[in-house]
Length: 353
Image 1 (spheres, rainbow, N blue to C red):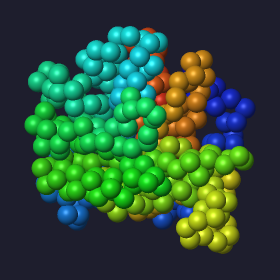
Image 2: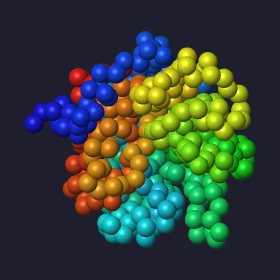
Image 3: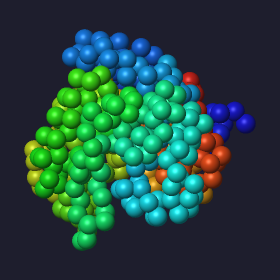
Image 4: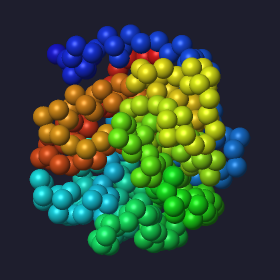
């Protein structure tokens, strides 16, 4: 079976829905599309220093997707974000952070994103073999009752000292603590760029009012798109965002600035159009959008990951950042799943919508 036939099989009876859609709102010709040389096209005239350009080049030119302009990153910080027992009980080998790094290498990923402790423990062995992305803040859920806030777990200089190519951080846009988080991470990203590291921002929305009796607007294209736009404003080099599943967050919750015309002009209910709105909010694709792979549901994981990859690629996104679908299964199966997702981005028949 060819790679393309395998993709068709995983898309199932919705293959034509995803593969034949044409975006008629925000046109592909207005986007900066992922491609070889994207660093020269986007960042050569920016204020990023030469060392940061070199770090970005290390990310974009590693793994199976090297020199394509696409990224596939393995993120494993769930030991903090979701508790280690809950994250690793299906596959306890990943309590050992070396297995996480090895999965990223064998999986052909552009880089591996994890914690100070996990990457620091194996820095001398692996920092020169695969780009390290140190996640500098986390939401620790041991506090009771749980609170949703991101806390810095170390310094940017520590990440630089252990050989990191990039730092990653999360901001909970819409939360009570978001103003502090924006300030903290803007300052951290400035320092990271000064030291020559790239920056990746997890742009999540968090507010109890975003979850209504009818809809969960945490994955709304307009709210996540605005989170992306704030993220690129504080100079994230890459944006990580959940795939949008709905729209009309500003309108239905009744806050912010909105009107019906902006929704009609910029998007439609089609998943690729919703994702394209996220891409547009990343300076029309000049800052790469990587969507998250989501949680693991075992048997359905491959089809879900392929579908997400197709939506992201056809929308003009720059790749996938996928953790639980890969590490919550036996090692070899995780490697295989990562490789199959990468084939979506290597497949020339799958084009920008």
